Image (cartoon, rainbow, N blue to C red):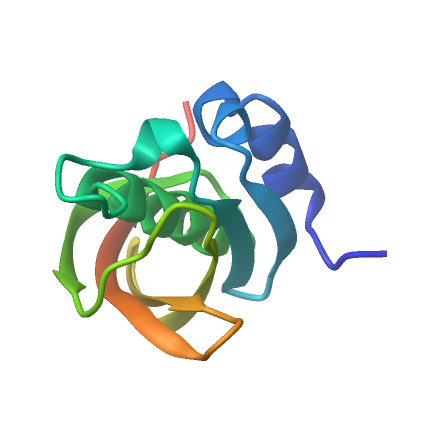
Length: 135
């Protein structure tokens, strides 16, 4: 059974965008998460590579799972990405997120997107989270 907190499971079940792209949640607990995504024909840009927006979306979805795994509800305050290598049609990508530091209501998370079949790093993402105050 995958290690996924109940709060992340609820969030993921309501995340139509990530699921519609074929993403699969493998793990989300203790400030960590792993999510995979196949590169489909709809994701390929005019250069024959996976569009960077889809790579960002994969990393951002994984970041969301990691920063929400400890609870309470957290949202992105900022994020940036470095594209290291291209992904191609048919690749299955894996994003792995890890909390680097949490302080007050803020956190910093790093996400590495790889192509597991050859270990190639595709992108490096850094996200900053902010937990929401209780209503």
